[in-house]
Image 1: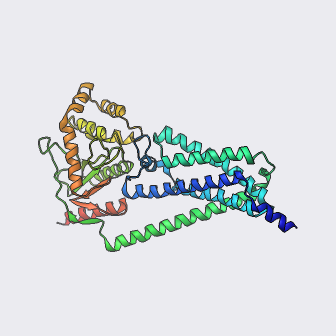
Image 2: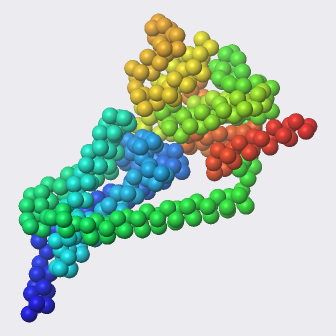
Image 3: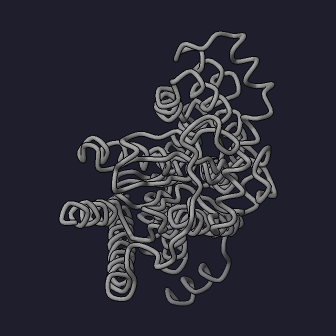
Length: 400
């Protein structure tokens, strides 16, 4: 009799639970997409996925921010683990009547936690990053809907009891821990294997040496290439960069450190490759919509020997990039309103930027930052490899 009663209860899934399972599955899909997208951005610097509509709705910008990871793990991975927990608790509560109350109590607590986290992340996205990820918005809406359904249909019943939730929460924590450990283990193993293969088979530098035109005066080509370090340095690093690219910001800081560490041995040459449809012909839709204007004003500052001051200011304030702030930064480095206006009307500045882009395209540059060392593309895995390559070139030059 007891078995028949239990089976009969298990036969019909309550409507609120069906909706919740459907929503949690949808959240799982959204979270999985963000993980895939995050790795694409980390590998290539940017993506051409449909979630990049403009500067306000840009999955790339969100994924490139420092808020997109916790201890090197993408937030999307935590999202996947979270929705797996919700699905597991709902499923177990339906199958095993004896522990239903414990599972549903734990489920209710997790729904509240999820809603709180989503509100915090949405605030960071709007207030700090100033851009929204469409997949993330989908997750926020899922969490909001789950909370509404839970409060409307589940929390008011005797199933909700915080005192009985500990067992379910312990199970949830175990699921999250196992999932995160598995992800990190697999990812690190794959990365280590990839790094090992690269070390064995491929030099950190491309075997193809490119001829890169470097203008050392304002009268060469379409304008001077701004350089940091000695023109006689044995190591010349050409960096194709975008002022709105977070990875370019980190690479720029690192390269300036190398110049300081290796007095007169390393020179940086800055080349433009803004991922902005306003001046980059390879882009098909908006991405970094202010980077062309910032590049123009950086070159404008360069005409008054203030390129690197503007360069540093633009990267330092990267997350607040806008058309207005681009001009404000020019004021801050000492340019007048009339000088800024003149530069924005000067077609030669844009022509130089487009010339840099054409150079980059001719050398198959498709992402930022792309670095060439003495004409050879750096294809290594990390900055320490880059440091080692430069150290070896300097050592060889000193022996000669």
